[in-house]
Length: 310
Image 1 (cartoon, helix red, strand yellow):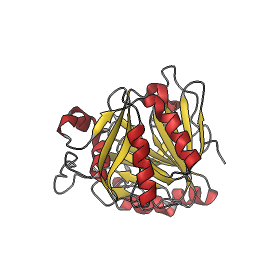
Image 2 (cartoon, helix red, strand yellow; image 1 turned 180 degrees about the horizontal axis):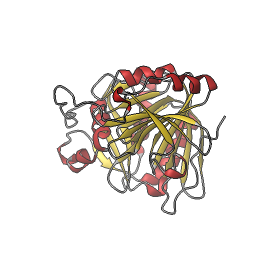
Image 3 (cartoon, one colour; image 1 turned 135 degrees about the vertical axis):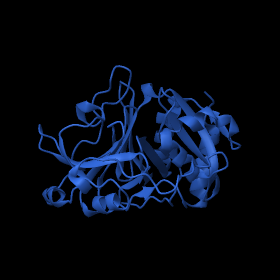
Image 4 (cartoon, one colour; image 1 turned 90 degrees about the horizontal axis):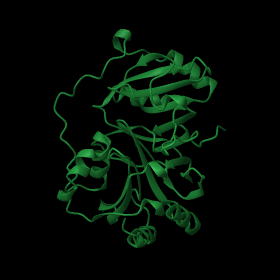
């Protein structure tokens, strides 16, 4: 099993992810259809993948097979044991099966219009690598953006929306527009001290309190939910947590703001810890997804209420 921790951090605490290329296109690739549901069907064909989503501040990875990915605006759930991916179909510009000429590894990569990696699925089995070679190319054999939707997609109504509306607003642009207009949000929200994150993770681990974690890349969100098995913090400030079947790494020195936001979810108002980078983009959310049990929800809300203001 590959080491799931990120590589050495940059001097400012940012993680070095996707190898030394930090999320940029690398290697030689063969285009595949980036449109949903065709892309979703392609991803679910592979049986053993190391799926990675994130950027310079936060990263999540999980080995396994994909659940059917969801699109922004659709229903959302985390299926235990499967890789949970949500994408902004309007922002995923292309997808390719990419071979790294240095290592020989093969991955499925999704890209935004700027050529940044939105999500990567490293194919771990020989069978999946062979299957990737048989995957039909995109129409015309060229990397092209998905056609525009037939009708404009309304922006998420995050101001009066539920938990999923908040997540989808982050998925669009990292939540920048939402954060800039946060005074319009009628729910509870306050800045908290990001330095408490390691203590929060250690507390939920020792208490056996399950959590949900979502990490955002350009146009993509990967999520997991379950108990925290391991927590760690390096001298350089990287915070690591093994959550259910996933590994989450956060470059704490690069977190520029931390917010506690309450929005309506399955059990009523539910708190989420949102971590922002230096550009005001939300890179990770820690919360409770879906139906988790009344006691879990109550204990989580008590913990959230105890967190100190920034």
